[in-house]
Image (cartoon, rainbow, N blue to C red; front, top):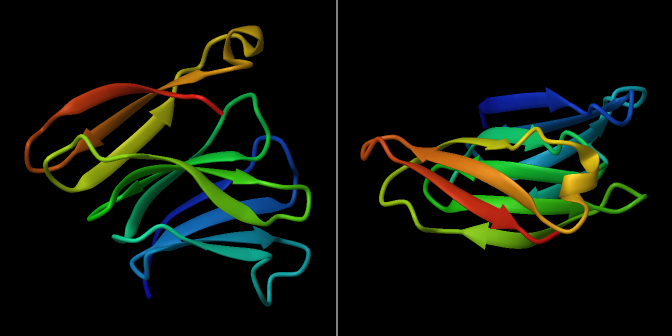
Length: 128
């Protein structure tokens, strides 16, 4: 189904994540683009994907009808949802990590998420 979001990894040159209406996040190695490295189902249609600015392997998602998620990828590119956030009352629309120094983000990171119809912004912490 239609791709809604695409972002290249700031940590690995050939790595790309996509989110789409089919409720999954695909991880791609651009050197082998015929098939994805992995698929992680998060539900709800993935409107936005955002890599952590300092910690490789962490990806945040805004999943329209299923809240927000943090996915951790291992060295082989296999992903697992390690955290969910469901405090919004409408479509999950935007997500981003706080861009502070790497030393401040070793044990937790601040995320900002926003939703569509209720026009709300929420701040929450990921304990990766």
